[in-house]
Image (cartoon, rainbow, N blue to C red; front, top):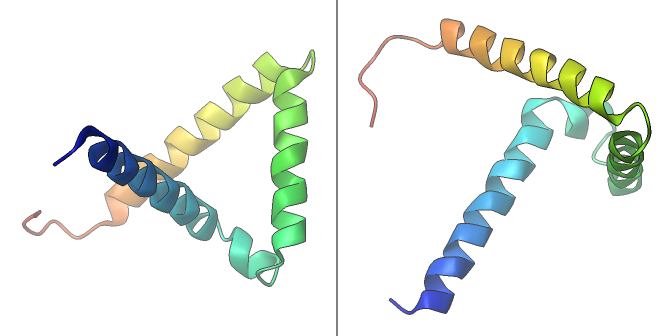
Length: 82
């Protein structure tokens, strides 16, 4: 496989995973799949991270995300993984 194909697949996977996070967080449902609202919220997040409150927001959101991933793992059935 050519280098550009490998890179394209990695990028595609990254985009799919990021989209999955938007769905997992309930954003699609909460906004009725309104792309304008979703994009606006992401721009607000980016602005917040670039502000003087960015480090505090990053720390808070890291903790919240870690807690959510941990809680989700506890809810998964303990079956074989593929």
